[in-house]
Amino acid sequence: MKNYLEIAKETLHIEAKTLVDAAENLETDFSDAVEMIFSCHGKLIVTGVGKSGLIGAKMAATFASTGTPSFFLHPTEALHGDLGMIGKNDVVLAISYSGESEELSSILPHIKRFDIPLIGMTRQIDSTLGRYSDVVIRVTVEKEACPLDIAPTSSTTLTLALGDALAICLMKARNFAKEDFAAFHPGGALGRRLFVKVKDIMRQNNLPIIAQNSPMKEAIIAIGEGRLGTVFLVDDSGTMVGILSDGDVRRALMQAQFSLETPALTYATKNPIAISDAEMLASDVLVLIERNKIQILAVTDDTGQVKGVVHLHDLVEKGIAS
Image (cartoon, rainbow, N blue to C red):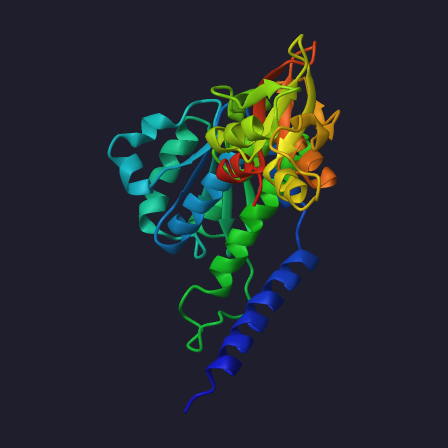
């Protein structure tokens, strides 16, 4: 029986060595490519065929999500009308390990006819792609991880990694911050943490609020009806003065002098933690909740009147907390 674990390890070692070798031998043309893309006033169009095309599509997606307007264009589609998608202010990044892909080679004269800057990613500088390119990023591979040294493995891994390196360099050049990344990923976890505010998630309707001198029996009913496990106690002006949780109720029941007629404020947490800024980020509220080991936080106005509630469960539901 073959030792698949050893085969897998060998594959990873071969590809890892390819990346290390490339890092140690990276040429200045790489920097020229970064500058060409950075100074571009249009879009970065990535193109390639087969495995190179698949890698190119991933590259375009990475560029687009990290501040460099980009899309993938298949050479065949370009030959049948989509070449018009390339504008005079754009830059083309063409990928072909051999540099002799027939479909790709067919569109290169048309790209150069319009004087569009062309970056080639290829093994051979003197290939068709290399000759047409203004800048060439060499994709040099000692051997493919494939035991036949045929199937694109090490070469595709290196090409993908070089694309990532380009994207990271451009992020640095643009001072691309996590806020910018979140703007391109509003539906992602980072986007939610950086854009979702208290006002977007707080509960505002049918809040369990009772007077501070209300008896415990009334407070217990309010806790059940409010479905928050908590009731807010307010003074005559409506200012919050205490919070009574179902945990407080259970502890009160253990006391010998407990009475359902006792004012709820007797067993409540006085002067509870609250926030008055509904524009506050939900992620900052999560920090406040975790630091104080609580599950619920009241949102008040400037006079201390309860206007909303943020519950830990709401933060989990919205993906702010895990």
